[in-house]
Figure 1 (cartoon, rainbow, N blue to C red):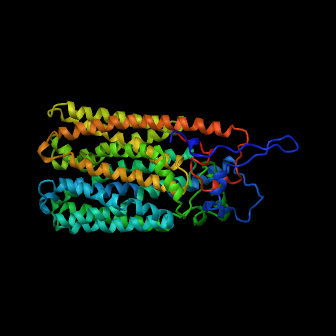
Figure 2: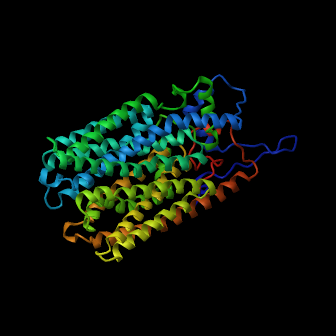
Figure 3: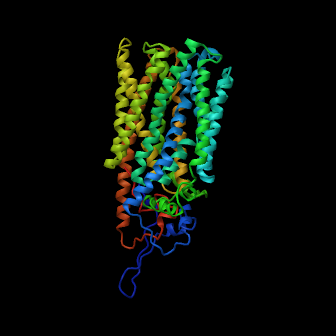
Length: 518
């Protein structure tokens, strides 16, 4: 388990032909696994022998088309994904606890229940993302989660709220892995980091917009009255908007390049060809047991898993309690809705900087560590400053929003570095299952008896961010070491790359042409 090459058979010895030249042999394992190729091979059926080249201008033209048709809708939907699961935080200071008779730790469990549903459905939905048309299945899940969220407006008791949060988690479980697969499918490795940070940054945009909408609704209901409680109106707005965007997603986002209605037939082939450099293809519908086992045996899978667990304990706590935390600093309920919005701006800036710096210098992991360090400083401010310094503690909470950068960087690395479609979906599922566990634990650290300082929760968050930084250092070191080993394998006498090796649905362990992004 120490290296890539230790998992593969030694390269075959070369024979000597009559000319005195070495006879090259492809890796035997690659030959064994090359029969069930990637969906990309369909694009080149009947084009055997033709050389397809893409000049720089054509590549830029295709990228512009893809960006304008994919990114706006992906960004808006992902923003709603965040808003929908955090609407509960706004509702917590808008009267929901009294209206549905929450007692004791009921609210904490509503925060965790979303991720229990997410955890239960994450692996099944990852398998469905592989088996079913990617765009259509994702759109179906978006529409259903919008419908479920709308039903929250009719909840009258804790049991009903638990059921809604559970099913909301189930159907939102497809969003992040689905978007990671879409990014891997449509963009080259050098493009994936920035694009992943862009669509994920709409979490911050959603926090800004959601806070303003919730504040406007709360003030409007207070001044003008309403037959519906303000928090119920917020759930209806978010739910109906999600349904509308889900319908747009179904129509607009294709399953892959081969059925993109907004690409010409010849451009569909070029759109596949331009991602050949990824050494990963665009998808394979068949479950491959050897790739599943390889995912479980790969140390990087569990390093990713550990990071998600450690990082999401703070996220689960802050996401569920950020409005109540701001209120505990000494602000009113309505002010807490408004003053939460700058945290979203900090997250947007941190993610965009992270994407730019990471891709500009080819060091995504090191760049993302800056956000985690900023989050660490923020939590220290919250813990160390006295209750009377409410502005300083509020700034600390804003800085904590920057700690999301490594999480999305690792999602982009699953897109860039994990190859073999079954392996990729398995690693993504394990990563997001650990994400769920962390988010289940997070709200439970904020106990009512610890209010208003929540010192045990804050110390737990501090320790988790610190430990996650050490895990990031290990991931960087491991990938750097494996790249050196892959280079050594490529330099061996007798090494040969197969024709169309990029489209054979090989794993990153099998394909020595795949160089890991750091």
